[in-house]
Each structure stands twice: as C-alpha cells, then as structure tokens.
Image (cartoon, rainbow, N blue to C red; front, side, top):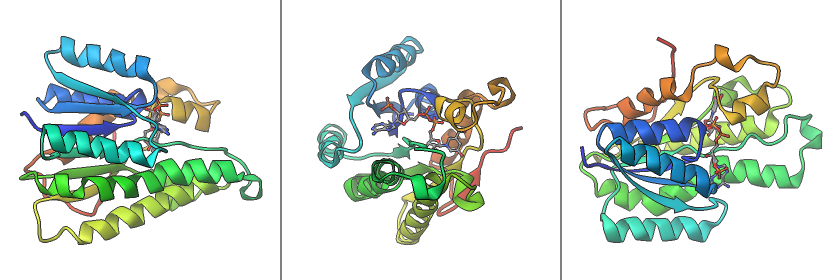
Length: 232
Ligand code: NJP
C-alpha cells in the first residue's frame, strides 16, 4: 500500500498488465514507454479503478532521459520501492550473420544496456526504500539460445548475468533483485516471434502479472533468482 513502483514497457503487453496489477495492490505507479496514447489508456484504467499513476513518455535509448526520470522520482518521493525493468525488443529473427549493426544496437541497447543504466540511476533510490524490489524481465531464450534468435538470446543471457552479479552486491541490504522469465505470453512481441501460433493458447499478460506482484512484496526474500512463470 502506497509503495512507489516504476514500470518500463508499460504501454502494452506484460508491462501494461504488471502496472495495473501493482496499482490494484495500492502501489503508486510511474509508467513509462514511448507510445503516449497507450500510456494514457493505462492511466485511465488505473484511475478508474481508484489507483494512482504518473506517466513519463520516454525513449529508453536516450540515456539522459533515464537520468532525468531518476531525478524526478528523487525529488518527488526520495525513494523507489519497486522497479520493474520490463521493456524489451525482439529484433530480427534471422541467421546470425545477417543481423545488422542497427539491430544489435537496439536489442542489446534496450534489453541489456538500459537495465544497466537503470541500476546505475536507481540503486540509491531503491536502497532508500525499506524493502526495495528490482525485477527484470528475462526470457527462456537466455538459456535455450534458439537458432536465428542470436541477438535476443545474447541480450537476455547478458541481462541474467548482469542482474545476478548485481544481486550478489546486495546481500547486506534490504534491496533484492530478481529476473522473471514469463514464458510465451500473448503480446505483440510474441505475435512477431511466432506468427503462425494461435495466441488464444498462450497466457494473457494479466495471468502472468501476479508473479511480478508476488516478487515485489516486502515479505518476499528471494534475491538473484530467475523465477519462471508456471501456468497454474
Ligand atoms: O512485449 P511488447 P512483451 N523505449 O512488444 C517498450 C519479455 N518476454 O510485453 O515504447 C521505451 O508487447 C514498448 O513500448 P513503446 C520481453 O523480452 C516476453 O511481450 O510504447 N520503451 C512496450 O511497452 C520483454 O522484456 C515474452 O513501443 C520501449 C514494451 O517495451 C518483456 O517480456 C516471452 C522501447 C514491449 O512490449 C515484455 O515484452 C519472454 C524503447 N526504446 C520474455 N522499446 C513473450 N511475450 O512471449 C520497447 O520469455 N519498449
């Protein structure tokens, strides 16, 4: 209740559902993505359910934007209780030798370097919480390393290494960091990744979101784990 939660990739898919679910538990949401209209829809949904939401439209590839966001949160709340670093991109599904420099830049940029920038920008604010919780959306691709998914797989494997290394630095404090592997989920990204698949067979993001909420609870003690969503 009253905890401050920042969710990236909140304009659709898993981030949208996690923002709504955290708001329903009483968290004050700071929602970010580039698509303003979709963020406004999230804001409407959260407010009409009695929750609180602040929108920060931002291209995460802009490092200054992340620093500014940290500055705004520091000034307004002086702490961050929950970080859900969820925004991600798939890139091209293509033979590794055909992956362009632009794709490497975007996929490693959003999926790996951006989380590193969030750690840099937000660790002090997360430590200022009495139970800071940092969650990062990973993927089964980080270990399955499927053919033609080289850029995405590499970006998520590096994300796992980044977060698990960082988690070991947190053993002396109340802040924890975990990775969430949502598995195949009914989103725009998944539709691009598996075009022939019937989306109705996949869990809706609203089904996956409670796992994020659970890991964000002050009573949760896991740190440095990759927690996989299992359909109940
Ligand atoms: O993806 P999608 P999901 N700056 O495409 C944002 C992982 N995952 O919900 O800027 C700022 O619906 C984008 O916002 P916008 C996956 O790797 C998924 O499926 O408005 N934001 C949107 O809100 C990812 O880490 C599956 O375009 C940027 C969001 O990211 C996470 O789950 C399986 C941005 C992407 O929404 C959420 O993915 C799995 C930028 N430059 C892991 N670029 C799955 N769905 O099956 C992107 O194992 N965003």
